Image 1 (cartoon, helix red, strand yellow):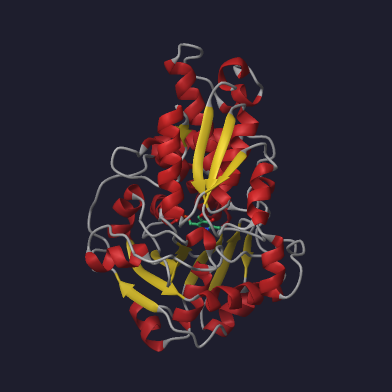
Image 2 (tube, rainbow, N blue to C red):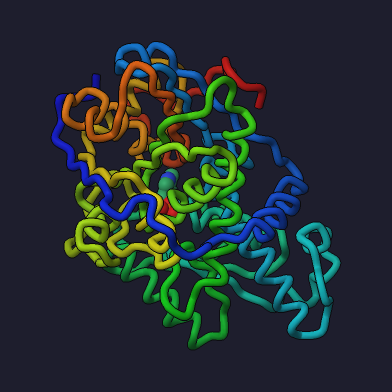
Length: 398
Ligand SMILES: Cc1ncc(COP(=O)(O)O)c(C=O)c1O
């Protein structure tokens, strides 16, 4: 259905070995309480894709569709904005302004005099920056966002719409991460990064706790026998790790988790092959801009190195084919949002990969479409038609 197209599959030899608890359940309970209380919160739909499942020789195939998340177009709305709220609350406590401000207090402007003097910043390929800018506007602080050379103007405009200043940096996403950190250090801004590294874990941990809500909703919406497989895309690995933790919390046995990356930016697969986190070289020139990350997030890696059953790398063509396949079903999915499903369909069509992953006509697969048409012009160019509203959800009430 998507191919034949070349892909790589690496079965993780460390899958199932015990490791550290990266995301606490108490932290998730807090995130869930806060985010579900935000104005405009509604679970996104879980869509049943029976025709695609049948053609792929799978029993059940369901897609969690994040296109309408808080009107921001991607699941990232759950992470960055939640981390902004937490960061402002801790800073208010540290300054003796308010010991335990909630995001509702911040949104109501209760501590605006203090928060409007604070600046949050991050590097982004689009979606995370949009979430941080939206959070900054909602919770009342200043915001400066760094983007790298190839981030489209459409994505930049979507960030400035929320009142943030955007600064463009030469090089790749990883260069923009370093530049954001450098300027933040010099100016006393707060970095709200979705990737973690030694010495910087608190904020990205909050980001990932926010992401868990997407997987938690999917578990609530799932009907019938539990999923056997979960396919999810990886950039720095944050969302894959969040999904992994939440699947384990909600299903026993946990479904087999397969992490899918662009073949030009497969740092998680490379790390799994090496047995330790590693960066991949090159300009990471993939159409899947949200997944164009060359270095895994430390926290994400700590979860995925033992919890992922396998890692895959797929070409850009697979993402485009998958966008078109979904468009034909009335589902709008962006180029960075479909890698997981693309990986699933490529593997399902390949006898050796089917055997390695245990995929068969009895498999029940959950995949995540993590963005809609976040760059409408690019979507139209790739799919050949405008992004229309997705069809009403046939399976689970949203
Ligand atoms: C639409 C979309 N899906 C998935 C990801 C990957 O998330 P992570 O970097 O946490 O792996 C991103 C990252 O920006 C994204 O924008």
